Length: 235
Picture 1: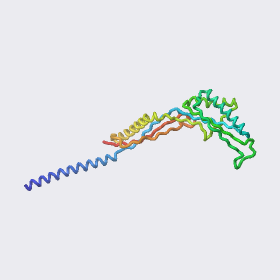
Picture 2 (picture 1 turned 30 degrees about the vertical axis):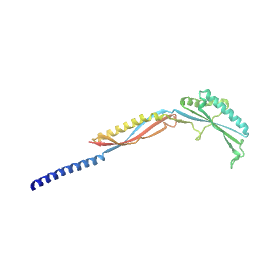
Picture 3 (picture 1 turned 45 degrees about the horizontal axis):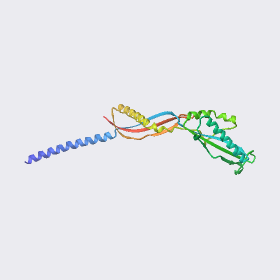
Picture 4 (picture 1 turned 60 degrees about the horizontal axis):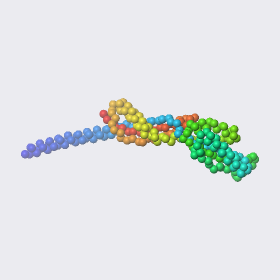
């Protein structure tokens, strides 16, 4: 009986040792596999035409008689609006801003030798989704000179601005392309390391950016997204 108990104890101990060894091996393999991962980036980009344009049309009047200046401003704005409407612009695409008046003599360090006292700046803002048509009007704005109207450069405060506002419709497709490109890179890495891709451990949504294609064509936009995906690897 005593010998039987000894045999049973030895058998149980042997099984325990085998199980312990198996668990240790599984734990080591699992620990090793946790470190076997690849982190890759996927890029998707596309060039698209701008679908919105904002054109602040700036004009200035100078003089010494404010009532007369306001009359001249009104005439100038009427001519500008008539020019735009003749060229296909709709009334609801125009916004007329309040004129800005600068009194040169009210300045602390005024130059009293100026031939005029007041500068009035007026801005009519054109906002349209018909970018191509507006660009054509921009090229013909010199026609206003024949009517005695000079459009001045808006500078940094009033630049012509082109935007691409429909990019939300492109986001799912571009995200899919970026992830596919990331997977291709990860697949190549796995092949080079004699491994296989396993499941995705983590992935981010990616950051979208919209920039001008270059300084000379601000009406053509480059949309791009970069996403980061981490895959686990297996033998």
